[in-house]
Length: 178
Image (cartoon, rainbow, N blue to C red):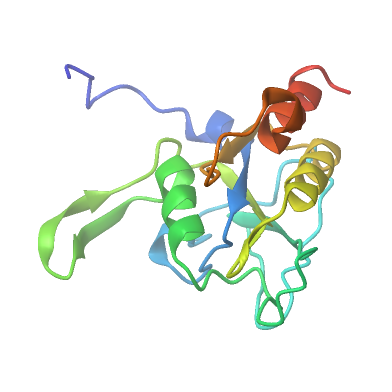
């Protein structure tokens, strides 16, 4: 595609960027989310680490919240049991990981788009689905927490009218600082 592989990065500036990921959670022990060489969270961060059972934030994964209006009884942690949330978070802000592979295939370096960025995880999807109320609540929290960028990799089984689409509604509020 012609993108430069030698573009100068600005880790100090990038480490002040907070990416909010709305998905199935995260597996914080992954090398992609190690906080080695990270300083304290940016001063603008106002969020919390409410990751639930067996979950701890670090200086890379600085925030975690869980939403469960569907009352999924297996949903007691921001820990990702599906893998999708960890995957999307690593695409956005995964650290450099040498010798990464998929069961020995395609071995090489893996890294996200902004490896020095911080992550705030908003688990809006549980095993039985993703509720509109949870997505909208996550938008409210992400705005209040000081998130700079929101990453949402969700879809619906059927078409949703724009005025009923929780992602469109939340994005409108985020963009317009409402």
